[in-house]
Picture 1: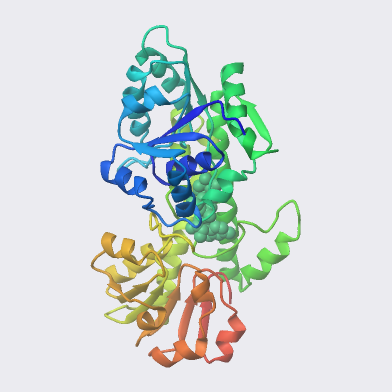
Picture 2: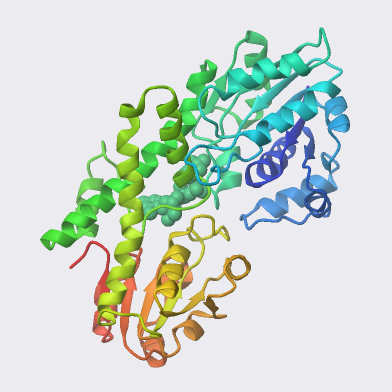
Length: 439
Ligand code: UDX
């Protein structure tokens, strides 16, 4: 089909690499930019710096077709694009709760002076509400006088592991715009996706939809994990509780899996940044509950460490602990704020002899925490272990044979940190099966 616009994608991390490849797949000519020269060289060769099912194939196909290219030059990007998507990260500030939006400012400052044709700049990053308005002013101020340029806000909701699917078949598209022209351009850009609900809003609402969605998901996970604490206190089974709740369609079963809780590059930092922003806006009370959500989540990690120490009789003292899982969730190599690694590190700090195995995130974990012990398989990690912890529910762990694993361990004790195993099967094989929120 005819594609009226040429697109650029500024920032080629998780979000940017996915967006660039998917937009090219839709038929657009796309130019991706990053300030990291080595990243651009790898992408241009068709190598993806991250583990994401289906994305590398998309990248290669569109590089081959010539629709997708990469550069480090803002001048080139400014000359090329009709629509510029900003996809840079907004990490948590060091030692603070707030988000660091300086990469967004840097993009606008680098791009604006080079603009020489009418264009739309579209923010996709997750930001503190109010950022879009500030960047819109900056964009106009730094662009050449009389230039037809404006900003729009179009948050992204993709999940790692489902990035391509979430981009090509999103649940909804949110367009924060200040003109009909901007709305029309973005409707045209997303038209090839077919019938997707589109919500057109102002800037603050568009920014808030994203943080509200992540806050809701985090709350749902912490809610069921708070119920797990109660089950532990009262002797109930949180997995049955969760199942029973899930049949109520108003509640629903997704994001209601109790266990070690949420991690990753988004949910933890986004709820902290959201509360920090609410404080700045004088609306602290509205999000006070999110601090509890964060605390409940972190308590699950502490609880897992305590449970393991109790199993070992009250001290770690060089005892062997096998940790299955390093990624923050299965089907990802991402170890940012990984609950599994956090538990492994705390046990090692307290004197346990930890051996970690993960099917995909092992090299990332090794690079970040070289002092932990690592193994090349679940069996090797479990060798002579006195307790095995399942902390990321990779399929390969869920299908482990309790007999085979039982043959290599020093004691048949397993802590199922994700409520992913069938308790009866493991108990029948002679294991002491423990889980969070279950008797
Ligand atoms: C999340 C949002 O889902 C996505 O919409 C947003 O754009 C970015 O943040 P992601 O970080 O990729 O995506 O991970 P997600 O699949 O949502 O999982 C987050 C964490 O919650 C993982 O650590 C997972 O193990 C945990 N989780 C999820 C639970 O503990 N229980 C659940 O029921 C669901």
